[in-house]
Image 1: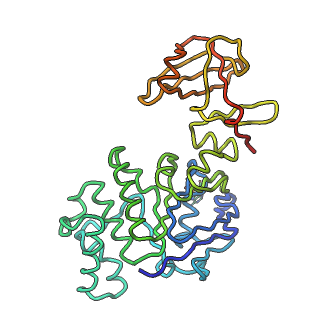
Image 2: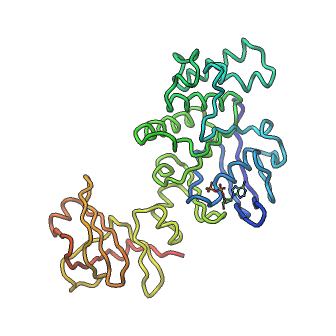
Image 3: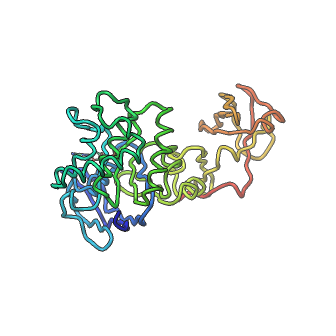
Length: 327
Ligand code: ADP
């Protein structure tokens, strides 16, 4: 493998006619990073990924890989490889030939490309399936083959567009761990597009949360979760209450709220509308007098100390040090 390089996006924009899909974003991703582009549908994640891959031309700005400006290079000459959402394996080629395909296109001789393809099948634990056709594989197995196929060109950056969305929840969590393992083993950068905050939190070294074509916040999962910059981030990441106060909006984590029966305390008064046992905590939903919804995650002991039921009047309080100001 060549030494992996840092990727830099400089004022990168994508416009489709009158639609600005990506709006002058600046982003530096250090070599060997697991980066998740996260955000709601339509926020510009895929357009960003496709521009990095070279499948979509940038409208403005630059894409720098290492010390090379790759903005205008064709996909095969960038040092990136893309794994698509639909794995798009060639149905008439065996697993081994699917994986070797990119090397065949590059004129690599048969022995070399087959040996390289075998190595990659080993890496993704698919060696026993080398002679099968894609239709003889499960969804998860096809995905491993697609991964091996993308990796055979020894990219410095692997681009993954919603790679787990077609899998059932059980397999998704299993493959998620495998992606992370692969990325660690290979030491290259993965840029993974997802709209699932849990997936991004679980995988990423660097979360880049996009909104309306811009980067709303970036940082490690813990930074983004513990210090959401805006109400949008707090709401999208989940697990937070966004509360309007006289001094502006604040975020308070659901697990930092305490509930007291009755309306006597200082805090926010409301009525309990839902109580759900969730295993390690009890989720209580409160409708405030202003009509907003608050969510409290109470440990079992805290819940048992002051149990509440649907219809109860309660006051929600929090320690001032747990309130986090939003921009
Ligand atoms: P995401 O991946 O976050 O869902 P996209 O990058 O696919 O977002 O899309 C961003 C915006 O650009 C959306 O408003 C979308 O409708 C628009 N868009 C994406 N691709 C095209 C296209 N080929 N032609 C026109 N508009 C597009």
